[in-house]
Amino acid sequence: MRLDSLAPLLHRNGPWATVCTSTAQATENAGDERRLAARAAGDELLRQGADSATADAIAGHLAALSPRTRPQGSAVFASDGDVVLDLPLTVAPERQHVTWSTLPHLAPLPELLGENPRCLTARIDRTGADFELVDAHGTRSAGRATGEEWPIHRNSTGELSEKHFQLRVENTWESNAGLIAEAIERRFRETAAEVLVLSGEPRERRAVHEKLPERLRAPAVQTSHGGRAAGASSELLDRETERARAEYVERHTAEALAALRAAHAPG
Image (cartoon, rainbow, N blue to C red; front, side, top):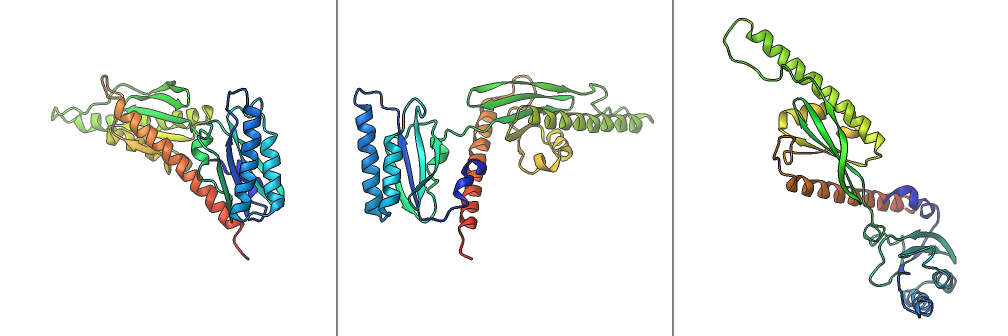
C-alpha cells in the first residue's frame, strides 16, 4: 500500500467512515442493489455512532458509483460530512465492509487493492546472474549479467605460481560480483521493481550483496534456493519470492498505518 495514495487521509481529522463496497454485480437489478447497499452502509454508520452528515455523504457517494468507472468496487473514506478519498479496488469484496473509527480502517485494503509488488530475482554464480521479473502477470526473463569465466577455480598444484593464480581467481570473483551488483541496480531501476531476491551459493550471493547500494542491500532477501546451476529447483525459490512480496505489502501497510497514527496524534 503506497502512502502517497493515502495522502488525503493524513491532513484531515477523524473520526472516519470507511466503506469497501463491490460494484461487480452483473444482475439486471444491479443498480437497485447498489442503492440498497449504499443505504445500508449509511444506516450501519449511524448505528456505529457516525454523524448524519458523514453517513449521508457516504450513502450518496456509494449510490452514484458505476461499474463503468469502478468495475470491481471502491474503498471510500469520509469525515465531517465530506468524502475525502475514493480508491478503486481491483478485487471485489465478498461483502461490504463498513467501519466508523478514530482512524481510517485500512486492514482490508492490501487484499482488495490487489497489490502485486514487482520482484526482481537474481540467480547468481561466480560468472554472472540470470534475472527474472515476478509480478501479477507471472514470471518472465529479465536478462542476465555475464562476467569473466576464467580463472574462477582455484588449483592445488603446490607449485610456486599457485598463490599468484589463486589471487587471480579471487580478483575474478571480486570483479564479477561488482559487475553483477551493477547490473542488478540497473535492472531494478529499469523494471521499476519493488522487491529484490538474491539466490545462489552463500559466498557468491553475499559477495554481490555487499556491493549493492544501501537502498537495495538493506531490504534484499537472500536464499540458497533456485541457484543458477542447471536443474536447480525453482519451486522453493518461487515460495521465497512470494513470501518476500507478501512481506513487502505487510511492511508498507504497517508504514501507512504508522504515518496515519502520527498525523492524527494529539499535540
